[in-house]
Image (cartoon, rainbow, N blue to C red; front, side, top):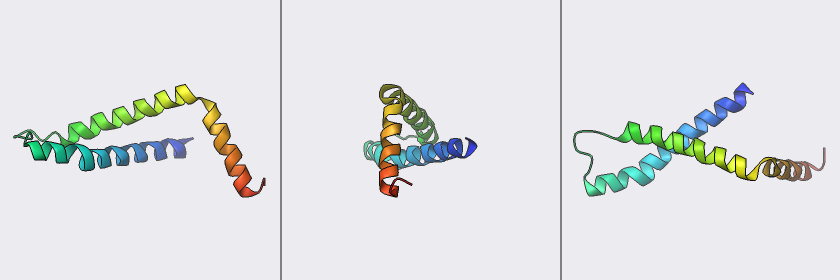
Length: 81
C-alpha cells in the first residue's frame, strides 16, 4: 500500500511540473505577467491538487470497472498465468 501511495505522489508531482513548465509558464512568459512575484511554485501546488481531484473524480465515475478490465487485459497478455 505504501509503495503505491509513493508512486502516486511522485507521479502527481512530475505531471504537475510538466504541465506547469510546458503549458502554463510559456503563456505567462509570452504575456509578461510574471512581474516580481514568481507564480511557479503556486502553479505547481495548484496543479497537483487539480490532478489529484481529477483522478479522484475519474475513479468515482468509472469505479472498479476500469480496474477489472485492466486486470483481465493483463491476465490475457500473461497467458492466463
